[in-house]
Amino acid sequence: SQQGEEDPQALSIQEGENATMNCSYKTSINNLQWYRQNSGRGLVHLILIRSNEREKHSGRLRVTLDTSKKSSSLLITASRAADTASYFCATGGGAQKLVFGQGTRLTINP
Amino acid sequence: SAVISQKPSRDICQRGTSLTIQCQVDSQVTMMFWYRQQPGQSLTLIATANQGSEATYESGFVIDKFPISRPNLTFSTLTVSNMSPEDSSIYLCSVDYREWAETQYFGPGTRLLVL
Image (cartoon, chains in turn blue, green):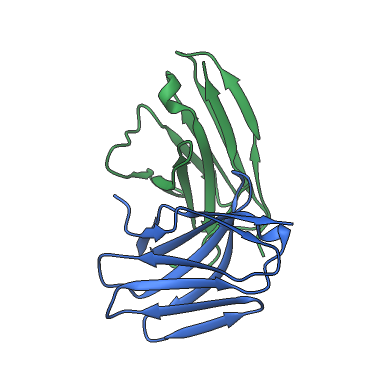
C-alpha cells in the first residue's frame, strides 16, 4: 500500500510562478525524499529531508517537513517549462523499502 | 551520480509470451531493486535483488511471474512471464550505491505494452 498521499494530483501554472505540492504520510519516518519523473521515464532524486529537520533548500527547491502533522511540502520557485514532470514523495529507504506517494503531475505553461 | 541503463527501453508483446528486462549499472552495488509503475500510477516495489542470494519479493509478487537474476554486482534481469494486458506498465530498476543508503538511483525504465 502507498505510504504517501499527495495533493494536488495535478497542478498547472504559468512559467515564472511558484508551484507547491504536498505529501502526507501515515507512519513515523526517519526521512522523506522527493523525486521527479519526466514523461514516464526514470526517477531523479531531488532532495532528502531527515525527521529532525524542518526545512531544506536546494537551488529553486524548498522542502518542509512537519512530523507532528505527518506532512511535507515541495516548493519550486520561479518555475520553468523544464520543471514539467511528475513529482513523488517517498518514505523509507536504507533498511526499509522505499514507499512512494501517488505523485503530483506538474505542468508549466509558457 | 549513477549511470544505469535498461534494455529494452520499450516493447510491445503478445499475451502469453515473456520478456526479460536487463539493468546494467556503471559500478558495483550491493542492492538492486525492481519497481512496476502501472499507467498513471505510482511506483510499487516488486523485489529486492542482492548478488548471490534469492531475490526478496513484496506481497503480491511471486517468483514464477517475475523471476529475477543477479549474476554479479553490476547487472540484473527481471522477466515478466506469461504476460497479460494487465502487465502493461513501466518497469524500473534502481540501486543504492552504499549499502542501506536511503537514496536510490533509477534507470530510465522499460515501457511494456501487452496486447
